[in-house]
Length: 437
Image 1: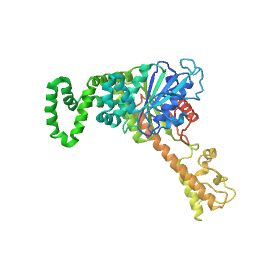
Image 2: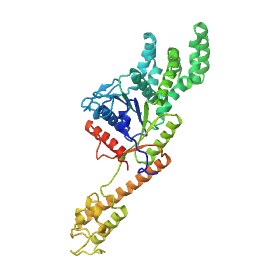
Image 3: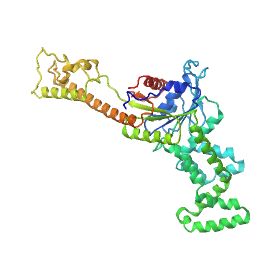
Image 4: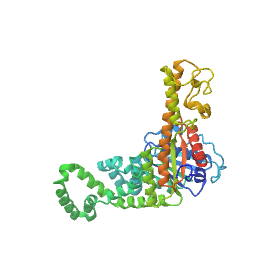
């Protein structure tokens, strides 16, 4: 199956549907997840939805694109949204767009403050082990992204929540993080340290002394006695909260499986990015999570697609032969070929209607013009070869996953840095839905 026959991802019906409450943009790093999430947010808001976009992108390009000096853990309203008063098919009324950037440590702090009394919360927040855990434990960022998603959904202030998943090495980390953090909190090491707090009193202290003396023999040499004491103090303070982490993680996981959630896998037409996308598609299917489709970003095209790489290279070689004085093309004025090869670029419409272009006959003896034309023809040949590679890679993905709807977004000439650029991306997403291939 090729892209021309693949199912089409209909973006506007997806964001217009009031039943769609969460859209999760996921994929490998560097494929345009942040831009896609922001563009979907702008388009949904301008079609009448009340939207919040949650990004975990450390480059902070989203804030710049939306005209906000800085994003933080609090949603901020974006100005400049051109509401369609619900005419686009949303729930009606003027749309709104809010944006925020995940503050991993602040989100962890909020959980502690919300589920512990003041004294216990202070003890936890000031604990050195907690400070290390909340700032850099493997999987904490992904877990806190899901935690923040659950918080936003519970507030019920927005019609639509769009999540830009963390730029992890693997897109699967977003789904695996709650389990990893839960496994850590449920692990043997933590349970051993929790035991004294559960026993309590002198017996607990006696157990603690015995347990700590056993561990310090080995772990103390590796990690340091102070570190172990910090961990034990942290565990004692967090004892009543461990179950809450697991409960909230499970609740958010079920939320991701709910019918109101839609996953949009974002990829570029490159082998590694589409391989990652394929893994994610398979994982979503295994977890019974709703996949809306694939957004294929940065797809290249050509205004002279009918001029093949082979013909362009042949034309360039003929020009080079003429430069060397051994031309195989008639140099006379009565050529039936291209009247001015130097004026025909590989992107011009004229290139589409020149059957003799494989053997161009330049109307000038200017070697500079001939050299420039040959160079342009070779650049066009390289572009056509790249298009062929992209097409083969895309077709391989659609053949393996014919059930996945696809929206193909042409590459832009520059970076997106404002609302107008995000609006243009949104338009291309909608156009790609109706004109795939």
